[in-house]
Amino acid sequence: MKNEKELEEKILKLAEIIKNSKYLVFFGGAGTSADSGVKTFRGKDGLYSSLYKNKYRPEEILSIDFFLKNRKIFNEYVKEKLPIEGLKANKGHKALVYLEKEGILKTIITQNIDDLHQVSGNKNVIELHGSLKRWYCLDCGEKFTKNTTCECGGIVRPEVTLYGEQLNQKTVDDAIYELYEADTLIVAGTSLTVYPAAYYIKYFKGKNLIIINNDETQYDTHASLVINGNFAEVLDKVANIIKKN
Ligand code: NAD
Ligand code: ZN
Image (cartoon, rainbow, N blue to C red; front, side):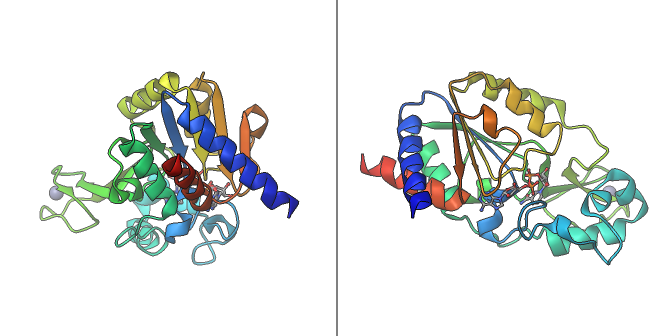
């Protein structure tokens, strides 16, 4: 009961902070898609808790070396474990759409590759790790919206930064710029353990660092407000409070 009261108080506080923000930026991870049915890597029921085919770790499969050597298993894994077709926005996504429409939320920076923020209706989204919505042929450059066979017979890959690859520099620059501009940063549903993405939080120099996560994170001690809770639930409540005022 005490915890619930504390949560409600924190949600009220977050709504107040958001209302008073001049430049709100949202930085998210896999946990923001959890309520839309996409499994996270870490945390409860995360994909990291088991080996694929009793053999492969997820970060091994999602590496460039593995992709080049074992494309069939890579594609099978992506199709099975990170399916993005038909995903629907959850209440948290909808709250972010509302905040963007109100002119409060300026940018979403996401580590996710599932296209869900765009599907939900957000316009200004920076995809740090690319998207499974975009694939291209390494041989002829032809572009696709899903994995398919290219007419030229070349290798088709997702426009996603795999383990062992560098992030797209322009995307990183855009994200860092937004973090610098922000006076409030909400970090939600990310374990903050995947680098360099997690490192970028350091570029935020604003007043309010808010962390929303089911679990603890290594940045909790730096945050002005830590909400141990569910992304969709918290954001939905916050948006409803702002709507009423
Ligand atoms: P992660 O899996 O490492 O961590 C997810 C975090 O979110 C955990 O700390 C977990 O406790 C928390 N969480 C889970 N459900 C939540 C909820 N409903 N509300 C609040 N918190 C919740 O994810 P990450 O930090 O984003 O790093 C994983 C990497 O894997 C990223 O680089 C991303 O590209 C990729 N990935 C993407 C997807 C996707 O696109 N949906 C899914 C899995 C992994
Ligand atoms: Zn081709």
